[in-house]
Image (cartoon, rainbow, N blue to C red; front, side):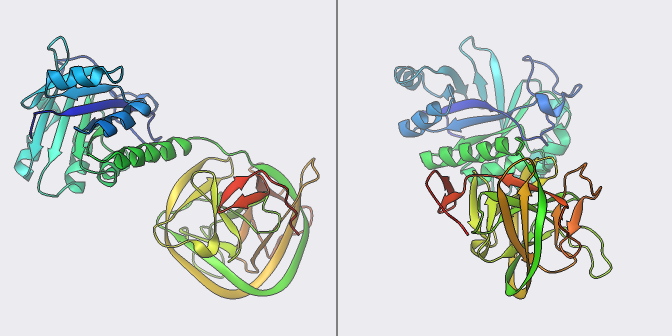
Length: 392
């Protein structure tokens, strides 16, 4: 690993709820000890670059601790922004007081990977540079070996996609990454990734609505969305039709066993081709525009949500049913079209009068309670906007 004119930026980012590794403590300690709770841990990001634009982009996003291979470069960059300088010397990293902060381990074989064990490390941070194009399995091995240990384990990644692999290995991921880039787009993409993770910890406000109309309307093209993730009872997708886009219904997955067809917990029979579905970033997408690789948000009865990747979209002509509902205690009316089938259901309030997780549309009747998500009525390219709009 070259050491001249190097620069790192460090930031602590709020963790994924699944992160289980603990944050670093003092220098010169054995790393394995009692683990902290997942809520106490943080993801660490260092940015390695010689590009001033990349440095500026990092600073603008709150990344203020930099590592230099040259004191001159550190002094130059310190005149541009307020930073906390660290310095690299060979395969070791020091602070201004010449205390060792981290060690760098280059790994290109299984034997070298085996040498990286908690009992062999006596510094706060360890930086792993995976060589030879192999990353996923070694990252998983490191996560398993250091699980429940104090200290920070980071991996060098050359783009934001690689960084995401390291951060998600065995679900909990490494403690952090070093983003070795010369293009500020990778800084922006990685920050966006963390923003999405942090959003997923928030809770959406869901509203109770009472069914006011159920009507069979004829044939239409409905969309089944198959995800790369399994859904649990009480989870589904937020869907609304072009009419009454100000209210999104929580459509249940096909995870429940029925007498008619086997359970498919990865699937939501979501509605007609023109309906909107909620996607990350507060946006919507037409169901007909979804395709493999796109992301949607999966929401449960309590409003907790997570992102999921679309694996397949299936559009077929099927009989449809129209459902209308009114907000409890309000004047707003919402509507949705769904396939008229026993496997299609709307999610109910957790302690609703029905006492059920979801009600199949074939059993739905006036007076039943369902969950909706209120939103602005106007949309432009999937983005909520404020404008006058009439929908019928």
